[in-house]
Amino acid sequence: MRFTAASALAMASTVSGHALMYGVWVNGVDQGDGQRLYIRSPPNNSPVKDLASPDIVCGPNGANPAPAFVEAAAGDTLSFEWYHNTRDDDIIDGSHLGPIITYIAQYTDGDGTGPIWTKIAEDGWDGSRWAVDKIKANNGLQDFDLPADLAPGQYLIRQEIIAHHESEVSFEANPARGAQFYPSCVQVEITSGGSSVPDQSFDFNTGYTYADPGIVFNVYTFDGGEYLIPGPEVWTGGNASPAPEEPEVPSSTVPVAPAPTPAPGDDDDTAPEPVFSTVLPSTTLVTVTTSLAQEPSSAPTPPAECRRRRRRRSTQSKKAKKARRSTERVVRRVGRAQF
Ligand SMILES: [Cu+2]
Image (cartoon, rainbow, N blue to C red; front, side, top):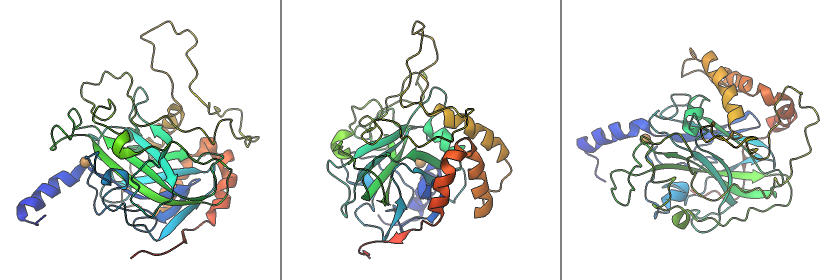
């Protein structure tokens, strides 16, 4: 488009709420700025809304491989870090309520279109907060665990924020509105793991539709009940049984249940929503938020790292070993550079 004063104004106002991915943490260790290095970063923080577009998969720059990969092992905890205009700012406008969903695919140099994706994590509405509320309170970090039995190799991991502030109508019916997708594809090399290969064959251009109640969704009239996260169920191929790796978890730590447990009584329709696994981390995060209140948004990296470490204390013993191991992990140049 031609750049005019009018379009500059339009952009200045519309850019205000959006989000971009900055980088990746592996077991609590910052892997550094990954933009255009190991992330196929879009040119700006604007959303994608057209479900028929290849951009819905990895964004407008999704067909251009980045020069590097982040290294991790199966079972590692990854944190994808988002921001609004500068790192550690307000992350995303508070109006942009919605879920954060994470998918994986075998690595491709292509744009990610086609039936290649498998959902490995999702975070929607937990009965009181949206996933977006939580990353805003968590310095932009969205945590998820890699499947414990994931096979080694190169992958794309796609995480998206879906913002619902204009999604009471579909983009198809009104291109001025519609759900806003912020997809970001990270190049990851799994250096060690098991033998499970993700196999859901999900295709965003056909699997996400405007008939999906989790896509065309009115967040303003939402009754606070159940929100149906778009896409397939989370793949459990690598996690069918819990990994037998935690002899050192203190008894005060609440064990992570493999699945929500049915409420014992099941006799009261007005009872709170089922407790999802996301509730535990969110309680931890609230504490941290208050202690962060006066941190300047331009704080240098070391304090930021301290803050994040504190947040993880509940799982510290479990993660400590891994964190040490991953300290030496660096982004490694792999394969052909494509410039
Ligand atoms: Cu926005």
